[in-house]
Image 1: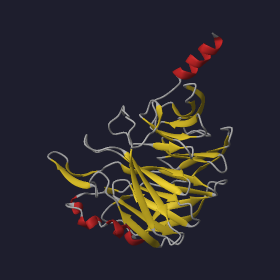
Image 2: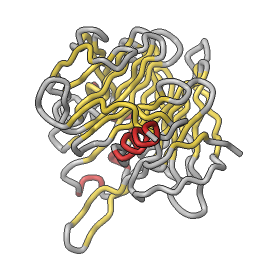
Image 3: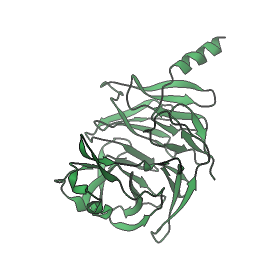
Image 4: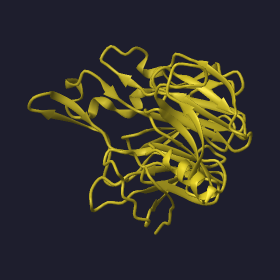
Length: 319
């Protein structure tokens, strides 16, 4: 009875989560952007929350709004960033806090911890007066121990051909939502933008090496739409929003945009000659999101691939 009561108490602490990350076979970090408790350690086998990890606040090892999360499977360290002010917290393999640093990088949406690298990709909102569009800072290398910026990756935003989007000039701002991921090759990085059907390969010097265009549910670019009361605005799609690693490949997630389309993964390989190749996999597992605007998130332990509807976690199957 005592065990059952403890399980019920732990389960009562469970939150609806916006993002998740696998830690081992049954343990997951589940995170919510806002709320009293922002991150927890969840045991999917037992169906219980084992530990509240991050509280909401401005004190030591607290965050205000959760942004990027990443678990380094090589070093067994966990990283969680504040999307609003760029504060980042690191944890050891027992989920004890190691260090924290307030970077002052706003819109800290994505983290990638791989081997000895820790990459932070902030959101990119551009306006008519945005400088250095042809060499725009797109991601930052962080020291994995000290959590300070050590280097920067740049990207030529002209490669997105924004000017070709109908009515592009009628918006006051444009949210690009990039994601930069370390490839299995040292010094090579994949660059994607959440609502675009292109994948780019750059090196440590930010030189573009290759790019590839995809057919993802008929999506090419975001659209500019006009509202009768609010004027022109941006309509985005949730594609290339999240990623996993399996072997030497990176898989980016994409989401269905209508009843006739399906969610899935794009497998990306980098050849020894720095060329990109892709393969598309559609998911057969039925997920029922609690929020129609919730992005399709995935995570993997290197073997199984997991998806979620924001309440439960599922092992995904593919057609």
